[in-house]
Figure 1 (tube, rainbow, N blue to C red):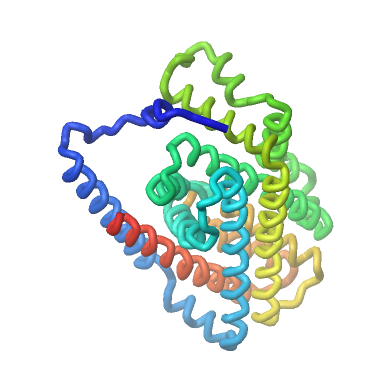
Figure 2 (cartoon, rainbow, N blue to C red; figure 1 turned 180 degrees about the horizontal axis):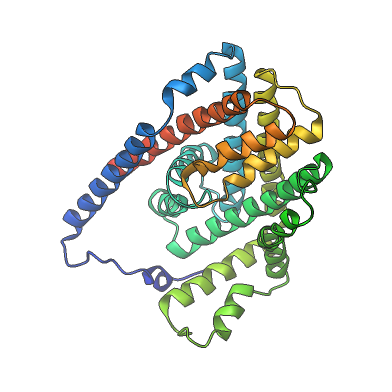
Length: 345
């Protein structure tokens, strides 16, 4: 799998008239200030007092178990990315990728979008730390996201099964289920995309070639084609690394379900297996709404889903507050790591 330096010149530098040293310092300072501002507004609007009250319901060992499980989840997601990058560059160190993954979560959590937005940090890190070209680094991130979405599809299938078993979707008839068909198609796409690339077919490239209003020789179009080609070459050449990355991605996905089980058990909420999974699935789907951290939708989802099984709203809100406390802690740490990296680099 090869690329050229010409492919890395596809993204122009808008501040090129400035001297390079001044330009770089200005960009670093602006990025650092932006991240700190983002963290300030996120913490200012967070229900910190209520989160603290919810945490006091738990014993110290229970909090340690929840945080420990989250650490394992991030170890798995970092391993997924490492398997992809290490297959092409043996110099990449696994433990150096972990803080980057935490930073990616922090930026994605506090910005608009369904848990995306911090991926450019991955690209920049591979460029600055290991000298990967922009195209190659982007190709690794594309594969990382495809495998993440692939695991999400498995979670979605698991969650929809639970929603049907628990009777939530069938309570008012079929329309709620039909409204999720588009989501199912969207999340199954990574699986289809990977299979096509393994057979030497590139769907995005085909689409770009057939769209009449897109210049085929545009730099951005050529860059996307090159990145997709590299991702496809990885799928064919490194099948073992691909399977390993899929394996740890699935472990991370089901680790999130296990964490939800622990949370409601620690809060003395006892539900049957499928009811618990369906309540988790309703909350997981709320994060797909393009709001920072599923703000508002997560609370509504848990009050509705747990209330469906007879759990009081106060108990449902306690679950949400624990989730918010976890995410703000990890997300805040991620933003600080990203800001520190921007300041140093």
